[in-house]
Image (cartoon, rainbow, N blue to C red; front, side, top):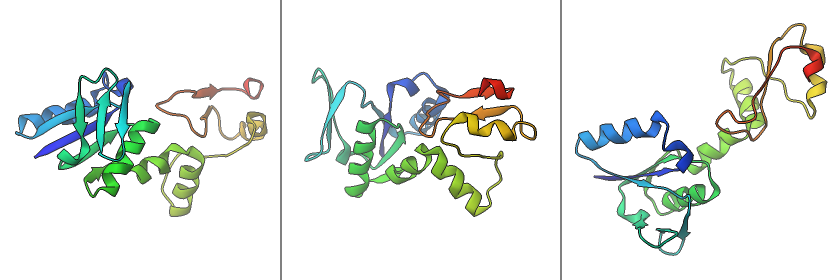
Length: 159
């Protein structure tokens, strides 16, 4: 079995997916990293080519694709794999659903999934009135990623 991991370069230093890749390799599975950063993709052939042309990976050669990626090129590759009938873990559509924090908060609330109280606002100052009951607040950008842009607000003046 051969598994390709679409991994953005920023995730290469993190424990995941490295630990999973190592475990799969130890069990005899052929594992390769497909890094979209600094590469280009040919949608007609399913081939990822490194910028300098030194490496070519054909997505059609993999039995499965696993994604640890949110880049536009990586998501396009993931969409290609799904469309081509390659088994995919962390599908294009599932990643798209969690990228938008507002939509995810709404979906979780509707499904009754327990989470921290969530409030949506078009401007942070609109949240000043809830600080008596909910403090501190953690502000997240709607399209924030990997904890980027998080702000801890301890008093209304900080809004």
